[in-house]
Amino acid sequence: MTKNILVVGEFNQDGLSETTAELLTGASSLSSGGSVSIVLLGAGSQEKAQSSFSYGATKAYTIDNESFSEFLPDKWAIAVNDIYEKEKPDLILLEQSTVGRDLGPRLAFKLNSAVAMDCVSIESDDAGFKATRPCFGGNARATYSYSASPAVATVRAKSFEAKTQGNENGEVVQIDLAADSKVSVINREEVATEGLKLTDAPIVLCGGRGLGGPEGFDMIQELANVIGTDKAAIGSSRAACDLGWYPVANQVGLTGKVVNPDLYVGIAVSGASQHMAGCSGSKSIIAINKDPEANMFKSARWGIVGDYKEVVPALIEAIKSS
Amino acid sequence: MHFVICAKQIPDPDTPPSAFKIDETKNEVVPAPGISPVLSQFDGIAAEAALRIKEKVGDVKITVISLGKESAQAAIKQVLAMGADEGLLLEDDAFENGDHYTTALVLSEAIKKLGDVDAVFCGRQAADWDMGQVGLGIAQLLEMPCAIIGKDVDISDGKMTVQRVLLDGFETVEMPLPAVVTVSNELGEPRYPKLQQIMQAAKKTVNKWSLADFENLEATQVGEQGRKLKLEKLFIPASDSEVEIIEGESAQEQASALVSRLKDAKIL
Ligand SMILES: Cc1cc2nc3c(=O)[nH]c(=O)nc-3n(C[C@H](O)[C@H](O)[C@H](O)COP(=O)(O)OP(=O)(O)OC[C@H]3O[C@@H](n4cnc5c(N)ncnc54)[C@H](O)[C@@H]3O)c2cc1C
Ligand SMILES: Nc1ncnc2c1ncn2[C@@H]1O[C@H](COP(=O)(O)O)[C@@H](O)[C@H]1O
Image 1 (cartoon, each protein chain N blue to C red):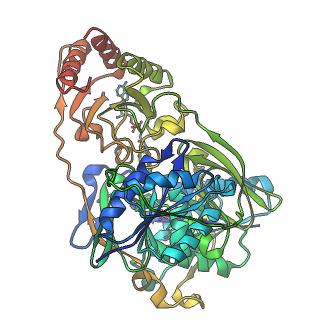
Image 2: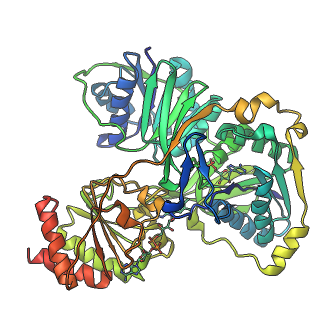
Image 3: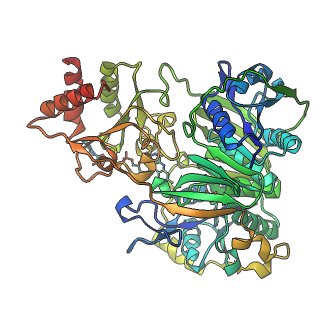
């Protein structure tokens, strides 16, 4: 059975976000030949819409207007709702991002339907859609079916693989719409990410409460320097962020960032399920912990039981001399 | 002013993964022996946010609402001990096995029925299903503005100001009351009730409303009958990782052994 799918896309100056490209690719296989459309809001959206066609969109709805450039969730919900009415998709997909986690529930409740948040896989069959997502702090997974339409899902980055489909053309529909927000933004601070982004780094070195203080992160920074700051980025457990030892923007886990690097090194991090929820997709994990019973060892490929104050300097030397 | 705190009782999220079990025939979590259910962490922090404002502005009544079984009284009592004034338990067999939509629907009808609510405080997500949608759902159903993932909340001159945590930064927003906010751990630790407060909490009123108390709600809209999301399967994902503990006489030996493993695996 064919399905019509609407993707709520995100973009920046450089183009469509990677996850949006993934969602479009995923949507085109889930649609079984039905339509895949995308909505892009804000100035520049018409131009960015072009690349959505190569990932499988056949139609792009845009509000190429400065007044939609700032993400205001209630206002954006009005816009996406308007496009829903035109397109009547069976499924609406959003990123599990600052946008999606705010907009997804609003849309679902507006449309009298249901949303599954932070999904890692979506399936489609004649009965409808099934969405699978982690729950219980990453200890379990739940698969849901929907008994209302449209199905709404926010999807975690890298749940689908982005692939171009050999198609370059589609229809761009520019919408004129005015909407207001009840919320006004007084101030917005982007945390500058100089250099390598945590979510792009092939190696993530993560520090936890067991570091005993912010100085521990200086030692981890040294380790990152010898590996190369073009390869290694630094993350932090929630406990370390809550103590003010490292910026929240670097928190890894259920309520922080999800990373899938080639190598993840947990240094004095116990590996609570809510932490592992943000890094268990890593290709290899190393645990450095003085407690041999620490949970991190259960997901690790390699482990060193010991005091990080001895192990990390030794690692720095070993890498230098190798 | 009148504030509402939405508080949910959940299985303790600090249950060690080894004690976390699922009954796959019932799609249910098996309560870990000897570990009592708790107030969802972020709801305690939401209560903290509301109480800080009450301390500042004075004349505020705080009602804590929980939708759940009789046992959820314990979660309500905990927030009462922190300093909330009155409890409200929404309990009915008809409410059971619902989804996040039906939860938000019943909570929003309760808030409507209270009548004079100026602000609703929720947790950013309940630490059982980790959905993060009920606060937004209540706001949508009551047509109130909403800000999620707050690290600082203030109310003055009929407006709520929320400092929000974004994935890559922070944002401050302002919205007119009545409004909904969801609160995150960056706000700080919830206060720890003193023994005397726990004793006082035992004397505070906890009202109970069942389906019959809601003129606007039918049995078909709530619980299992009203749900739009059906849990088909709950399972523990398989993990096949087998750790190699790198041994050695000294940290230096361990470190060079690890580095050579990483070279062999072409990671370094
Ligand atoms: C709903 C919810 C969401 C959450 N979201 C997140 C999240 O997004 N991210 C997150 O990280 N957490 C999250 N948590 C918290 C999580 O449950 C843990 O409390 C947290 O991850 C613990 O951080 P930690 O491992 O740094 O600290 P601890 O658990 O205190 O672990 C410290 C570790 O360091 C080791 N250690 C101590 N000293 C040394 C030393 N000298 N050398 C080597 N090792 C040493 C100890 O053996 C211990 O294993 C969440 C919790 C809940 C309930
Ligand atoms: N059964 C419930 N009773 C009271 N409040 C709830 C209930 N379920 C969810 N909430 C509130 O909504 C927030 C988000 O929940 P959720 O959408 O389930 O992650 C929680 O932190 C609570 O503040």
